[in-house]
Amino acid sequence: MLRTKQHTILIDTGVGNDKERIWIPRLNRLKSPYLKRLKAAGVTPAMVDYVILTHLHVDHVGWNTQLVDGAWEPTFPNATYVFSKSEQKHYSDPKNYTVNNRVKFIIYEDSVRPVIQAGQAEIIEPDGAEFLEGISLYPVPGHSIGQMAVCLTSSGEEALFGGDVMHHPIQVYHPEWNSVYCEDAQQARVSRRWALDYLADRHALFFSSHFAESSAGRVTRTGDRFVWQFC
Image (cartoon, rainbow, N blue to C red; front, side, top):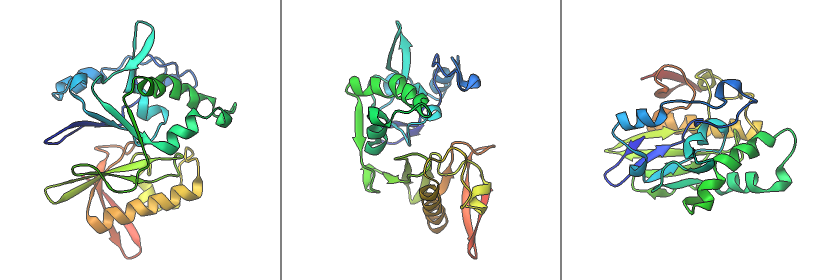
């Protein structure tokens, strides 16, 4: 969650509750206290202005919607949901549906299409330009078709929310290593290297989605290699 002078923003929304995810039993029909935790942080769903989705994988879009009287409705009624055009185009095109990737289309149907139908989606082509004051969206495809990273600039400091450009700190030391979930292996390496250069050159704080501990830290450069330090 980000709170600026103008906006309350969520970056990605986790797995969600009540979602049929039988192919990943530990994510199936969850009953998590996500909204209670959000309230404890001082925010109710109605207060959220923007939901920025780095990509449309199962563990990043789930709380976009919640089950209300048997139908999936946007969880954040006043929010604009922002995601990349290439992601939306891929998952909304029946030509891309295969037996091997059918679960991604199930995710799209219950967690993405409802916010589009509600008129709450802003589908963009991330280009690094300022999207909101202090917030820029950069294309970092590879892990997914149109993943994007979120850069926050505030009081002379920067932070980068990288989505799944890296899954583990070992990739800081070996940026050529992909996770099994990267959809375009070579492009994922290119995007990862861009993110590492960005972090090291700008001394930006990195927020990952999957690192252990705080998931936040900094990347420094030693010769032609990178080093990770948790914050």
